[in-house]
Image (cartoon, rainbow, N blue to C red; front, side, top):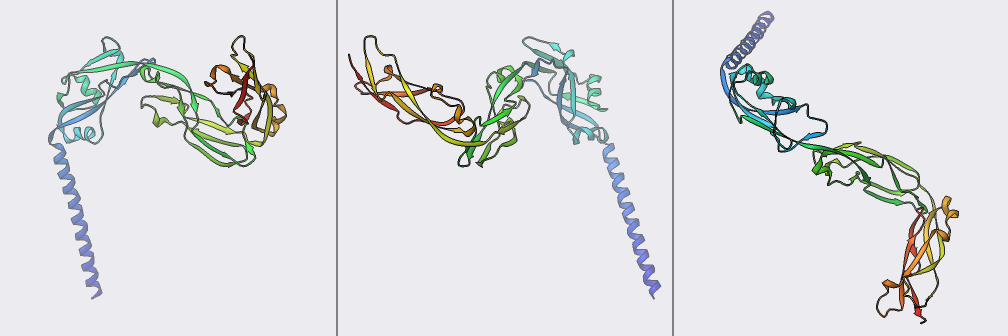
Length: 319
């Protein structure tokens, strides 16, 4: 009884194998027959221009695709259907026009066209019989980098120089009319809170904010922040009068003003009143006002959060 069951099971399994074999065989045969038939199909070809001079760049108005109607069996069309074919054209072999323009003639019966496309069938039609290429001047320019930053130092800490970039400028190149409009680039955002130690990182340039045909080098820069202990300092600075009319004598009260600032402990002793200049410009006095506005025009680079304790002084005209 067990043997009969085993025999029937083996027979069923052999029948399934036979069925699958014929199914695969007939499917392959059907595919072969279908691919052996002739088809007509429109395809779009990407055009790649070679040997472009180094001081030139392809203009957006250049022809960069070409539609063709191809005829051939499925085996010949399959590569041109599944992936977009590419047609390479040598600028050195183009017909030169005026103002940086070049032309290529396209002939559907030209064997070299089929050779470049690696197509063994027939080309029935082409979208256009001439391809236009325009080359722009490829300009290279060095521009500064700006950091997009939000820095919050811990209480009692700061930085003399803030964020220092290495390098502090990059090279861009692309079409001259585009490059001429770009004066700087921006890094990705740098956001830090509670900063109380030296910091170092790498920042990418925001390439997405630039026109697509602009090439940036390098695409990222090193950013560092030297952090140190800070303290508050102050200096009593004499006020310098400016633009006093000839023949007039003016007295101001007071004659000095306090400048308050934050500075690193290592720089504190280096700061002196000689590093500052505060002026009061008589030409900027408001009509009938008894006050002169104070301006801080000189100060050391190493100080931060600078403010004048008084923003104006009284004055009187003696004669």
